[in-house]
Amino acid sequence: MRRRDFIALGSAVAAWSIEAHAQQLALPVVGFLGSDSPELYTNRLRAFRRGLKDAGYIESENVAIEYRWANGDNNRLPALAAELVSLRAAVLVSSTTPAALALKAATASIPIVFFTAGDPIALGLVGSLNRPGANITGTTALTLEAGKKSLQLLQETVPSATEFAALINPTSPNLAEAQTKDLQAAARALNLQIYFLNASTEREFQTAFAKIAELRAGGLVISSDSFFFAHQRSLPLWLSKTRCPRSLASVSFLRQAA
Image (cartoon, rainbow, N blue to C red; front, top):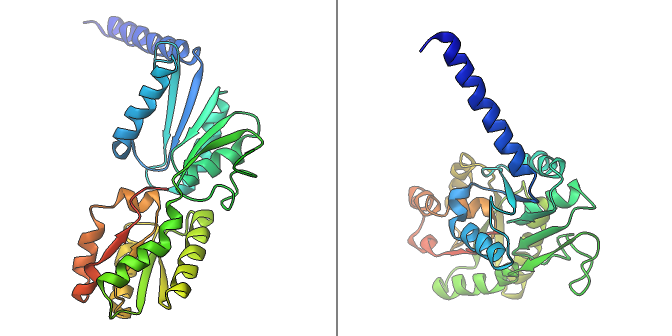
């Protein structure tokens, strides 16, 4: 193929791609903001698309879905939320608390549907459960309320322990504050001492778990945060590397990512 023909073909392909993308964006747009990566949301995305289909919307046929993923970096969420808003989406969907807060901060007019594991009122997402108000609504699993139960389970597993640790992600401040208050109240009710350790990157796990070993805590509560959910397979390995007392293998993991 001659160079001129090759350039012409390349230009035609590029033009077709741009036109196809433009046609797709001409459809009503649903913006989906995720804190992590799509690989972690296979089941949720399948259910999400099935729900849209049940309502009469099929991706790429009569609705376009624009996905934005922060890949575990909550600091990227505001910029990604702004991108989705700039697309003039008909509705915005968030899969975690940090994503919901980023969308709320980005627009006061586009409808937002969220999922959170915490109390949406305490987190500042809605004004009330009966009347969320503004442009936002959603659902909650209220797994943050399980803090007391998590500590109770650890206490039953290690009855001689009076000190435990909790792993918190500080880059999600609203969620971290709510989780900290919940666990502190639970610890006081159970007459236990709880130490809070921060980790927002995989590199910080080494520091956090070394501190757990130093404290000789009787167990660990891993908070309900999407970052820890994304690393649920590696967290037990970090525990084993610390060479902590065997009792530390008792880990309460609030598995529902917030």
